[in-house]
Amino acid sequence: MTMHLEGPWLTTIGKKKSKQKFASAEHARKARELEESWKELLKAQGVEAEDRRRRRAMSAEPLSYTLSAPPGRSTTHHIPSLVTGGTHSTARVEKVYTGTKILGIGTMHKSNAVPVFSDEEAHAIAHMRR
Image (cartoon, rainbow, N blue to C red):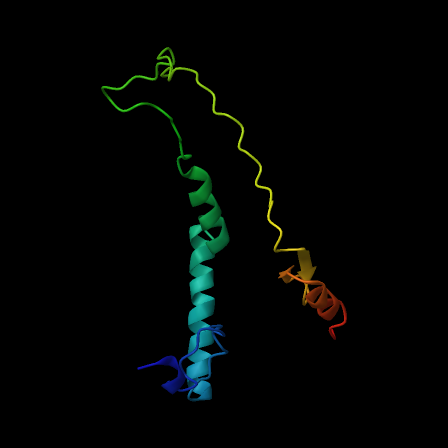
């Protein structure tokens, strides 16, 4: 099934949990009592949720990043580079138009470069509407 055929209940945004609605006032009262008793139990144990998370994070072993060679390899820097003869290439020859057919390059529309072969074409390009 594709996404456009799914109903509004399937969403990729708005996953925030909404306020809980209870079936009756009795259910709401029981939920409040359970929540309060849970908080009292946490206080009795001396651990609150945020403190517990903080202590766990602080007591965790720090990550160690060691850059070492695997067994059987060494990290020697005395191996010389390969000498390839030391030849240099020559400079590339510039390409220059030496013909007589093209008079120049004109700009037709925006930055569209077009070759100009005659004076009439140059005049037409210069008088075109923008």
